[in-house]
Image (cartoon, rainbow, N blue to C red):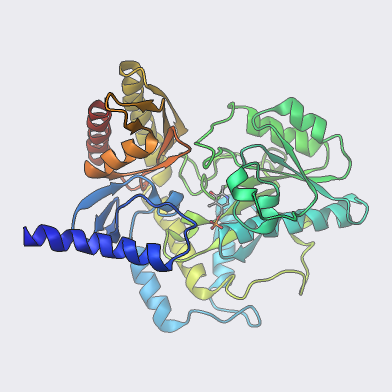
Length: 423
Ligand SMILES: *Cc1c(COP(=O)(O)O)cnc(C)c1O
């Protein structure tokens, strides 16, 4: 079949090129994507898939949202980069938009998530010395086992994942690792007067969508406030409506600063997948430790990213993506629960909003071939749905938040069929 052959060749060619010339720091699912629209992506063969990864929750607004494409084209033709040596005509409006939306005095713009996490750590340390009176060089940041905050040397210094950390020392000192979802452990760690901050994900996404107890985050915030320690929420994956509200760490209605994170870190869906945009949010008393020359980024706050972020946030509001994530998330989990109740090797479903995970028990088929999360993801791919396994036994399901109820039902059918075929 000549057509079939040439199709295969296109997929294989793209994979071969990447494998031959690209660094092998990823292990992608074998599918070569070429275009996207809303909840759908198409591969180079023209086959359509539901995207259930959403670029790790960066495309909450869906692929190539027409409003984002429009402002990106307009801004690209107008001006893309000024550096912060000068003011630009968009950054101020963007800063006001994001501060008003999330309820903070100030925003510091960066590009990638890891940069924003680094920024938050620098800010917390400086605050610790200048405002809390921690002796020079002694500031400590508490983090959690199983954390994922990015890939820089400082960030992998606090990782507990051997693949992330192994071989990259010497490490940045000044971190203390405690168990996640463990308030007594946090309270013990907070007794150290040199602690300046507690950095935590409201849900551990990379760990496998590990959802802590419902009162963990509010109690952790209260414990930090009581000890004059900054609570830093890394909402890079959970923020921007993914879990059914604007921020996972605090209800949208909560405006009391005593019950809110001191610092919020955002990225990914802040620009709807168009361009790297990240931000650190804090009130004056914390953010004002930065003065001219103490921190910066050439691209941070550029008019292209700023314009996109304003529009990306407006889309979340206008299309009620929080409400959609909350409502469809509940439907999704109850559909997955039926699989858990039916198949003994489907262990559990967990998540919030449209950030969910199915945990399976890896098995061996009758013919000796493995049946891990990876093989199930290959089967899902063949059936028209893309998801990525994390560890051997967890599949994360995080579609764009613009998904409709009918589309979600179709996806539930694909997943159910695949699970049945996976016997
Ligand atoms: C993706 C992510 C990061 C790192 O962001 P990059 O843009 O990949 O540097 C940090 N924290 C969390 C929770 C993330 O999901």
